[in-house]
Structures are given as C-alpha cells and as structure tokens.
View 1 (cartoon, rainbow, N blue to C red):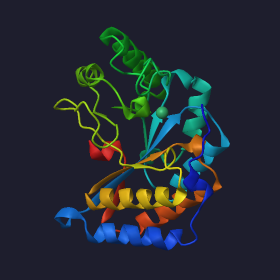
View 2 (cartoon, rainbow, N blue to C red; view 1 turned 90 degrees about the horizontal axis):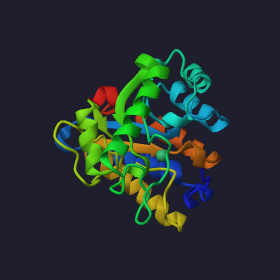
View 3 (cartoon, rainbow, N blue to C red; view 1 turned 90 degrees about the vertical axis):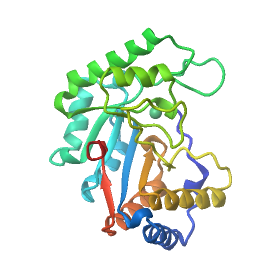
View 4 (tube, rainbow, N blue to C red; view 1 turned 45 degrees about the horizontal axis):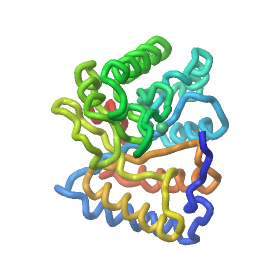
Length: 261
Ligand SMILES: [Zn+2]
C-alpha cells in the first residue's frame, strides 16, 4: 500500500477554516429544490488495525457522524474484526460496514487500475464477489451491509450486473462513472476526494476541493471519500474542521448507505 500524501496536506492555507465555512454556507444557500442536502463519508481500504484508523473512528464517534466503511475481505480476520468492532462499540448505528475489492489488486495489464475490470471473466468476478461477501458475512454477521465499493471506483458492466443478480443494495463509485449501473442498483457515488488528489499545486488542489464540495452539497447529494492511510496531521485537522461545520447546519443531513437505501 502506497503512503503518498497529496500536496494539499503539506500546504494548509491559513484562512482555510473561513474558506471552508464560506463554501458550506454558500452551498447550503444554493441547495436545489430548497431541499435538504444529504452527505455521506466513505472510508476505503479498511481491515488492518492502526493508529490512523483509530483516530479516524474517534473523530466520527465524538461528533456522532455516520461513516461507510469499505472493508477488503481478504485482509479481514476474526481478530481484526474484533478490533474494528470494539473501536466502534456503543455507536454501531453510525457505521455501515460494506464490501470493497476481494484482495484490492489490479488485474488490468494496460489502462487504468481495476480489480473488477473488463479483462476478467464473469465467473472470476462472480467468485471474488461471492467469496468476499461470504467472508464478511461470516465475520461481521448482521453488521455487514451489502453495498459494493470497487477499488479505484471502477468496475465492468459484468460486475454491475452480477451485483444486481446477487442482491446487493447499491454500488458506490465516483460521480459520472461508466458504464451506468443497471436499473435497481443505485450508485451512491462519491464526488469529493480528500486524500488521493492528483494536483501538484496545492493552491489549485484546495480551490478544486472546495469547489467540488460546494457543487456537490448544493446538488443535494455529496459523497466524501477518505483514505486514512494517506492522512497526516493536517488531513486529520481538516476532517475535524469540516465535520464541525457540517453538523451545525440543520439543512444538511449526515447519513450512511442504510439511510440512503
Ligand atoms: Zn481502495
């Protein structure tokens, strides 16, 4: 697992708190349909214990904010699950433990990385989905919720069709991902990427991030991606700043997939 930290987390603007407050205020004022905005956070690559993961859970617990956790089935053991469950104890209604890629490996030889891409056969994809789900259900029992987040937010049409056939509630990719999910399989898409941003120039990165946040919230649906392994002090600080601002706004509802289904 790489531990590349995006440049924005090395250059924290001094006026970031006020800029973020302003961004959320404007987004709220522009909420389409005079409606309420729904926001979810999705943490990817979950399974291994560690300080960063503990710190992440602590932030969500303290602020009583829901979190969708994409768990890599092959990385999870009974002991690890016990650890994860204990971290979330007494606040279990906040968490939505769901399925990430079986081993989180790339199978494509060229093009973008995918574990569930077009180079794989339908039976192979089905096997990885089924064994992943089985493992999570065996370990997590009723805590498991059947939503699938494909690694790198990408998967083939075969995968989407299989998810529908196997009775998954939803898939979660990025906004505008192709191919489109079949009818009956909603895509709880993420729009804001906090920790795997590609901009080399931090000022551009911050501008883009706040714009993404504002646009997504004003559209009434905003999914925010978290990669805890890539987080540094600044990233933890910002997450807390953002959550503090969001929970104060009554028109914004912080949810997990169970609320969205
Ligand atoms: Zn991942």
